Image (cartoon, rainbow, N blue to C red; front, top):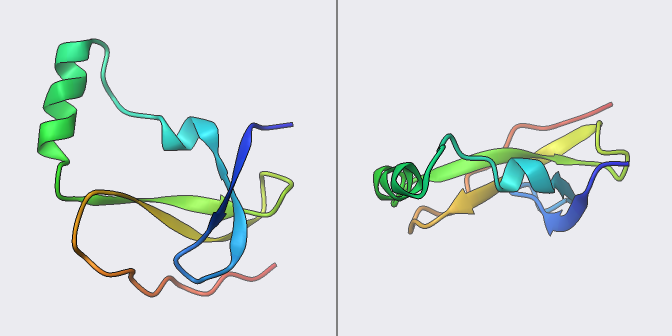
Length: 78
C-alpha cells in the first residue's frame, strides 16, 4: 500500500496524494536543491489526487508558493 496524505484537491474533492510525489525534486545535492528552490520559487506544481487505492486519479493538488488562485481542474471520472 502506498504512503498517502489526505488533501482537498483543486476541484474541492477530498482524496490522497502520494508522499513520494510531494517530496520529489530533481536534485542530487543540497546545492542543487537550493538552485531548484530558487528557480521554482513563484511557481505552482500540480500533482495527482487519488482515491484511497493510490491509483485512481480524481483531481489535482497544487503545491508551491505563489499568489495565483486555484485553477479550475479538469473533470475526472472513472
